[in-house]
Image 1 (cartoon, rainbow, N blue to C red):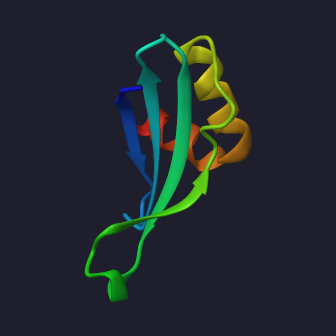
Image 2: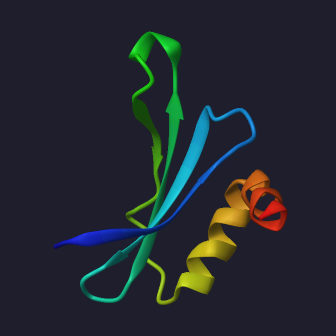
Length: 78
C-alpha cells in the first residue's frame, strides 16, 4: 500500500517533526521523528501512530494535536 506525506511540521528547534500521510485507500496516519546530531542530521522514527487510521485529514490533525500540542502552535505561526 502506497502513501504520500501531505503535511510535515517541524518544531521551533528543528529537532522534532510529525508527518501526516494519506494512503491509497484514502485513510490518514501519522508518525513522529527526531533529529539527533549523532545521526548526522537524519530523521529517526520516534513513535509510529500509523496503526490507527483516520477517515479524514481533519481527524488525523485532531489526533496529532491531542498527542503533540506543539504542532497546532506551529501551524498557527504559518
